[in-house]
Length: 412
Image: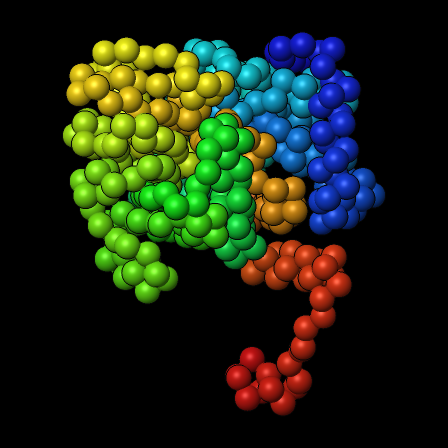
């Protein structure tokens, strides 16, 4: 067992967190029990880069229960919880992650989990997949395939595949209905505002909230802001999503217009340069900015630092930037993922669904090793439906089933 963590002595606190989420993740508990019996990953090395907190830790323990030799790192320098990392090391897993690490340390941790020559890659944002292709092509022969958790990561995979660069199958976990419809919408919606509220301790009701991007994550962030009593503004580049936002009851305008109005700004686009220099200069004094897209490129914090005449820590995890026009803007969590870098991430029950999809997708890769010809693999529909049925059973909900006559009528 190898590790690079902050403090191994923190493991009891981390174990307490893991125990709590385990008690609220019945799907993964059931899968873990099945894996303990069948050992589908025996003899397989799994490299995992996901936000390293308690729910991720339980996914790691589930895969380890199936016989996997786990090599774990975080997918964001600010989202790793050191006590959770310590608990995984205490459980015998290989962990390379520390909270607040430098980008050099972050990259080094990614390399450590790739250098073992993994058979399965579980990625969150595409860093591991890009690393093995760019720096360790000799290790690609060991890879059966991988799973990608995020919209951003899938965009990177699509670009790689279009160029003919993707060399092994990747399951697009984010495209599963049981992932994006619930994780991206309800999970992001709740966790974004949990992160904002606990960090700022300010009221949302009666304020103007600008949500940049109206995909599933943007829908969730907007829905919860509206529920908290905010006046919600949406910015979009997709005309159909903009229409949808209007019909959902939101104001839609350009960021140039919205920048002058907003009290809170939440970016959820997966793209860069959403809020930039001219937007900063036209904002209200006291405007609060945060990002819920995967990478810290949506709010141009580097430019904000450059143009600020003074910067200071206004509150824990909030930096203030005083501009030449006398106004001060505030950025939460350095512009990194607000829901995980300023909070605990998505609720346990939501991640139970997403990580059940991850675990079963990894199982699908192992069971079909050498048989998958496509590089971008959809989550098998039967996996999606099986997860949905397990969720309903946990909720005590029963639904109707089609009769033979109804199936025949539908041509099934």
